[in-house]
Image 1 (cartoon, rainbow, N blue to C red):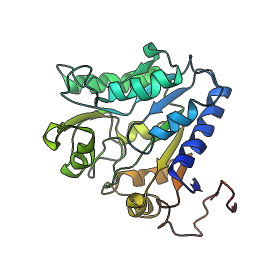
Image 2: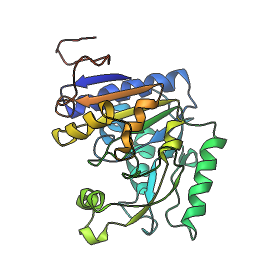
Image 3: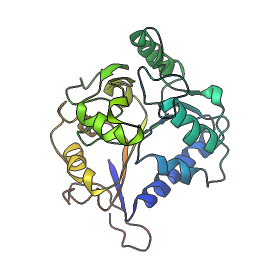
Image 4: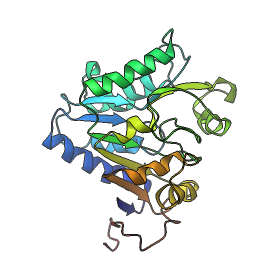
Length: 255
């Protein structure tokens, strides 16, 4: 596992975007796993500034709310369209989001898992982390080998996402999410984390026990994980654990 610690949230976007740009230059039809949320969004803004052709890139979103009407501005289909597909010049036909409006969401989840497999799997999966350790919408208690499925959102997650809605009552109670087992099949995991409020959970995920109590801790079992965190988010990481630490923007570089 390599951990890049940078001064600011905007710098996390720049570093992560550089990693993604290098992947796409070497494999123009790369399959990217697309995350939304506060930490990953700066990555797409920074990636748009790179002179890299994205038209052949394929994308699979991590998750989607169940029950929002088509075109709802806070559906992840719309967020991905706005922040990723349009911004980066992706082909909309090559960008998939779970069908949260399907008559049978459980079947839609199974179909989505199968579609990822048919695409040959994900080359780089972009991730954020929730305050309770969830990645995608895999809440605490999720099986570490879980597949794409319908999940019930915890109240804490709904409260965290309420800022995007007119009122907390408008936040859906269910979602379709890639499972931890699905995520772990990606060839490279890229976790982007910002803010002091994520420091405790990031330390637990990367340096605590691997447990379903902290779903993100399963990343410790993956062969290729890159973490890009700002200094505030990395503040509680213990030193001397063998990770690579890089400080940019004029700060010292240590390995």
